[in-house]
Length: 259
Image 1 (cartoon, rainbow, N blue to C red):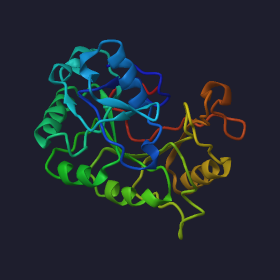
Image 2: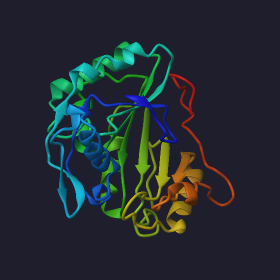
Image 3: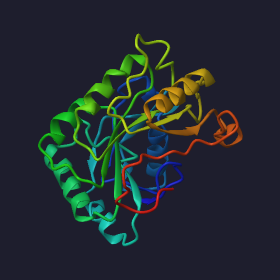
Image 4: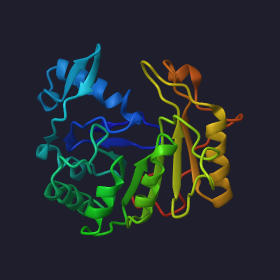
């Protein structure tokens, strides 16, 4: 619930904390490490959400619904672009549908903000959003880290949203050349690509990033390159072929200025 250093948003809002490891992109999840640090700092919200395994923090599978945090965006009078649940996944099965509806109600009451929601569980996103109003200030996305998880995009395509977007980070394989027919971006407004960062970061092949950029350009999908990553992501930077790629979707932004 603070100003964010994430390049494609302004702020984070976490009415839910905790998660589970679902797929290879979760292996080095920054949120697990951060949750462990916050617990060590005495923040009760994160107590018991992680455990040490092999010297690293891992999710325990516990979920914490923070109703006290629900009203936070209503106190932000200046429009912001808000990443929802950077420390969890709103569409995780452990999050009750009734609580998802409460989050939706807050977003509906704060149309001056733009909300960005990412999930690795687009199947549940598809099911629940069918019973929720389509909000013009809510962008819905899914994470795809390798070719084995491209099926998530098909679920996202069926979700009613003002903007549909992809987080192709951490990018662990080609999403274009390794797949017959390449990367299908039909119905997708925005693609964010990036390498993994932090301890144990797996390398990204520049060819994988260029393939995504070229696929976006061919279809008119906005392309955002977040980072090369590595153990020192600042040193590696975020330039691709001599420039930064900070494209955002063309749909009107109902909330604050884009970062």
